[in-house]
Length: 232
Image (cartoon, rainbow, N blue to C red; front, side, top):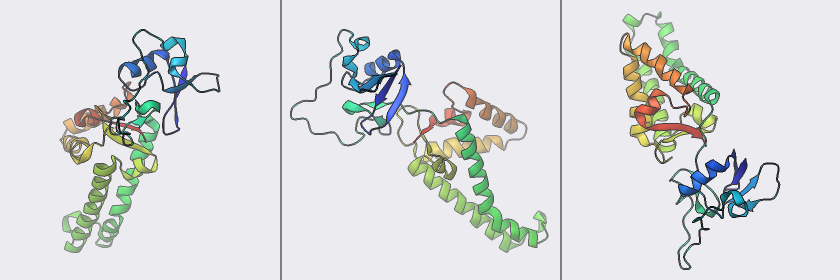
């Protein structure tokens, strides 16, 4: 087993020899990438280990006049760059972390709706005879929550809960920011509409939750939106 050292100074691993070779074939690492074997303390290049000295593998040498690449230019737009300008695949967020983030978001929603709930209680708690003032407060609270969460999802791929727990949503194919359509409309709004359908909705919601136990930890709403949740 090996540990890879990224250009950001962070360590990634342990990973197997096979995994590193796959990264090399996918241009995510090269023979100049810093790594060390389990139990060792000295960092070496991949080329220093005989396991990676297969025919045709050559260290990456940039052209003499090539301009320096901007930060993360070769990191799939959102990946973590490793030594030599390559990128290391982002690690999926833990299931428990995602659950806690969802609980935080649920509590946040309740806090935003608390003023409307208090006004409704003062009105007697009768939803059929809700007053115009309470309706406006409810609409305002719900709109504020949607705008805040929508902005965080579009700009950072995070809800309040995900931001607090340092996880985020990225596109499945290239680890880039998901944007408003994928992170909000496809991942949140569309599954919400499906979940509201009588009979079908509860079944979909259950299946959506159970999909977290897939090897890639992608729920049904991730498959719909083409996203995944990773550690920041």
